[in-house]
Length: 116
Length: 391
Image (tube, rainbow over all chains, first blue to last red; front, side, top):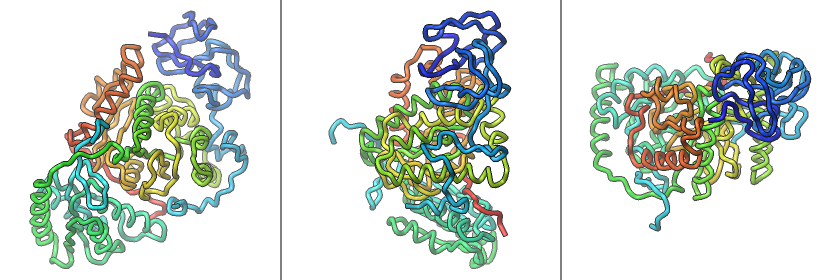
């Protein structure tokens, strides 16, 4: 069993399949990464350096933006990765809404308003 | 019949196939819910109640969703007969619900608590009716049905990192196979498509479906914006975050694997609205598990496959809910609530293909009558999505 899994070759994070201790060396899609801090099973580890503001990519798609610089081997979670969607607290348009930059829906439209 | 896969179901006069044959005891309003539950217990488990919190004091679209959801259950192919329990002064119209059953050739009776003169007399009369109908239904036989008669509801809940790596991709392969064979699948939970909608929209066979998908997702985001709220307080859930999921985008990308990789997106429909398309339909439901399952079954799904990482008990009153997990610890610690363990995918002792084969067989066996653990344990959760507060 692999210790960590990179799902798509576009990904810059891997998913730990067992608890990873600092110093552990991981062979991930051609690169070797040394784990920098304890990472729980199911949590993400950076495969490459990710700069603050850069997209974190898993399943081949962006899952949010790095909120600080992330070194290879670091734990990637809520402390250094933030989602960009459904954020009423910040004035950001959805980055990947299928090509639509701005919402164009009447918020009053409910489930019965979308009937064919 | 050739050697196409199929199941033994109840063929209804309109051509649809049921995987169960229940007497549905449906209260029009919360006020008649207890009487309905007592009546259903007279012929349990053939008769099941549909207790709910609504039916009166509702406005406009909110009332319409309640009415239509209850009517959809009365007309559902897993229901063979209907007993409507009315109070007598409520908004939901008992006659409309009875008609929704009769339209499909089912016997449907109405018992009114005010009309009968109270709880005791209404319960006595309703119980006699339910028992007689249950006896009638028990005499009906299952017949061979084609796999394309199935509408499969796709659901995940209590997700963790194994959901996106094992159980959801295994279910996705079943979805693709079912759709290749001419069947249907329905995906709900709009908030959990957020961040993965580009992948589904690219599979749309028509512009209207793609546009509607983006429109309803944008509505959910606009709702959060209008209230100045941050969806991160709710999505992912605290349990999701402990399990390693960081953002809604990550959760959505894993969740959307349930819908397979190639099944064409044919339609996007409203809550509990009829699913008519072969192929994949997206339904506008909230992410809350019970409300989502309630809506998708209302749309006509006869079997639900529910993937879980952390484990969850949710069932449905009229449709079997099959639980699968890719988390070996959950498969042991929540064994009561799990039908199928696919955790071997995680440690390479099983393959996605083999797990999908087992799940496909399980779907057909359950469609043919094998009880799920949720059914055996009496899990019959039911909750209608509410749009507005009661007035």
